[in-house]
Image (cartoon, rainbow, N blue to C red; front, side, top):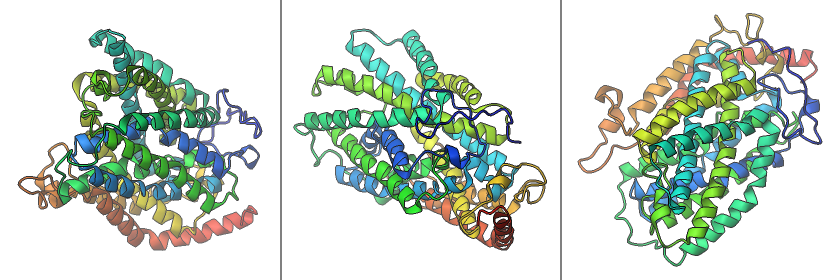
Length: 498
């Protein structure tokens, strides 16, 4: 899609223009408007990580997967190491000044990248729906505590109200999102510390569950990785593009990891700890209902916690809505970023209505995670291998071109080695996916042959998806991309950028 000519520059590096409607989409961000530092990125991700969704994930590991506390803790730690992937997939933004799926044009071609962008668009909507379900769940708890029954009309009203509110922050844009997320860090640190204080006298780390075998352990690990670092890789550069070209790569990776993995490990562990004495959190309609019926945590604290949880979930959803908006532009839909937010909200409304009335939260989440793994695992590997083959740089001006004059046009706007690697990697991921829905044996061979009489099949989907996708791309694309890397360097030298 050509660069929109009517995009007005509204950023002020000093004030960040928070609470104004951002006009930037996937267009190039000039150096003069790049106000963010790696520390700013840390603040945004910390605000996105000190949050209630990860508390719910920890509860699900105990209640749905039936881990012991120490099994859950090991999965939480190992799974969150995947945030190094997010750090690596955030390093291209300062160089290119654009979003992930505009950068993706280099590895897949301007046309070849469109179907991958569609996958990401649906993924972001799925995460938005997850947040909306929990927001509605918080509303149900508040209604129950107030003595009202949350029947179908009330649930429908909660969904509509949540969708109307959730579009505000992403409509305004990047600066507003970052400021809002940073502002929520300290209140939620205090709330989680208070929750721990209430829990410590009732929780137990022994004798709650019999534990699981290695097959279910791999399934829980895949679940955790997909909802932590891997599940965010396709969004990283949407925010680091506001960092200057010379921003420290070590600083970006380090601050991203510190702002994500560390708080999420602690919060997921808290969720697992609380699940030892309040079972069922993360299941049923809205996910939060057991908090409304238990008598251990004071009612006043539950009310405060739910109010803040809803506010924070709106802010978290803004990240997904922001990224889905710029992804819609990368697909080629001729809309401005803030117009894309309205489209996403309308779609999320319909999907959330269905999910609230037809499935428990944990069922929706498990099904969604399976679908996300299949495409993101090979995509992340292909994206990083391509970046390495290009000597860790791109030509920003060429990424903004979608016609035959683009360096990244390849053949008919498609780089076939990337699409072949993507398809083969997705097949490999599916073959090792321990899905919540039934797959044909021929498509699910690895899992089928590791299924025991009393255990689910092993889940190696992420590792096979990344390994096979990345290796196939390296074999098929190496010579072509190396040649293109030489052409890149020539253009960068001509533009005085190398």
